[in-house]
Length: 470
Ligand SMILES: Cc1cc2nc3c(=O)[nH]c(=O)nc-3n(C[C@H](O)[C@H](O)[C@H](O)COP(=O)(O)OP(=O)(O)OC[C@H]3O[C@@H](n4cnc5c(N)ncnc54)[C@H](O)[C@@H]3O)c2cc1C
Image 1 (tube, helix red, strand yellow):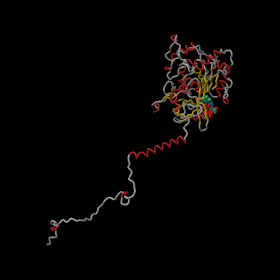
Image 2: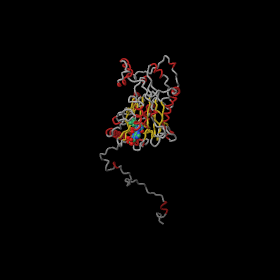
Image 3: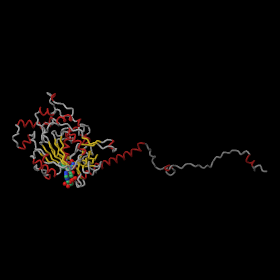
Image 4: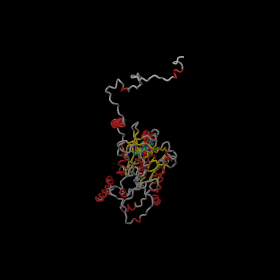
């Protein structure tokens, strides 16, 4: 058997000598070069790859953002005009409409609504406290209204804002409780409740503007222009010496007027005239505005309120009740649905002569009998001119102890309400044309003239000197 065959051949030790090869034929499997480093491109002029760091990553984005913002701002400034009132120094402006947002709406019945408004912009607040006297819109020295715009038909109507707001809380937001209607306090540091106000609106089914307002929803806007002064109460020297404390929701917190009688005596001042206010329906708003504002009317006010039925004033009744308890007003109601309750001649008193007539008024009337001497007239004129600047609230001190000091206005009212009230010397009438005609004769609204005083007031001797139709 051949030793080189069979299994023994494979088991046999290899005795071949090792002769190293000088040249090997090898196959290598290397990775090809990167696209820009392969044999074809590695000798081109290609720059080195960019180094990416944090700065180079974010800088272009920041620049893009800045350019986009600047572009948007430029478009806003140059293309879109600013909204009217957004940069106004005033809460209300008689020359332009300002936007207000409806923040609450209370439906008293299907025709009567209380609507709370808050200004959309707050630029007016910057100079508010440095000029509070002139900036605050609430001053009972005058009756004012605002024009509300119906933009679809470009029509405006007058409405009388009230210094009221709805107090909200988490309970009212969740719907557990109804917001409470409150009076705006002027001693809180809140820009007179951020410029809030309430409109008491009667909706007429064929009334363009009242329907427009009443159909608005919470969050929608109304455009207001004003204030338009409807009536300014006559000057009285007591105004320089004494201001009636503001009405508050809690009557026990209203300050008493302990020194008013003393001030009148010491300064030999005439009594403040009493007022009678004839109102129909929403015509009650002007006197409510005066009585609930800062510096309310100082005389006693008889309010004759006529309406179709009870309940139209529902949320406002509380304030009228408190004002009666404070001995500031007496409310006489006349409802169409109660027999014999309609306002008639028996309800109207004769005018009481005014306690004080300003020299200017006397001059206008040409009344020589009450004429002051030139010295007296000069002194009075200077008093009027300097009145508001001087601090006339310095109180008499020598016999203060004889002044009875009440704890609060309610305590004082319990005493004063027993004293008989002098009949009114001044009357104001507010309501629809038919009502004004019935109470005081027609008003020539088209030519803005009062017209002669006729009707119930004319019969009792009232005239244009002591009567004003709103
Ligand atoms: C100084 C001032 C203050 C005012 N304050 C308030 C206020 O606080 N709240 C308020 O609701 N209204 C107030 N008004 C009335 C208000 O301005 C509108 O006249 C009233 O809302 C109706 O307007 P309208 O556009 O809806 O109706 P319009 O389109 O003018 O009239 C529609 C119909 O309603 C009748 N109508 C209009 N007004 C009265 C009215 N007062 N009584 C009876 N019928 C009427 C018209 O004869 C007509 O048939 C005030 C008016 C003035 C002048």
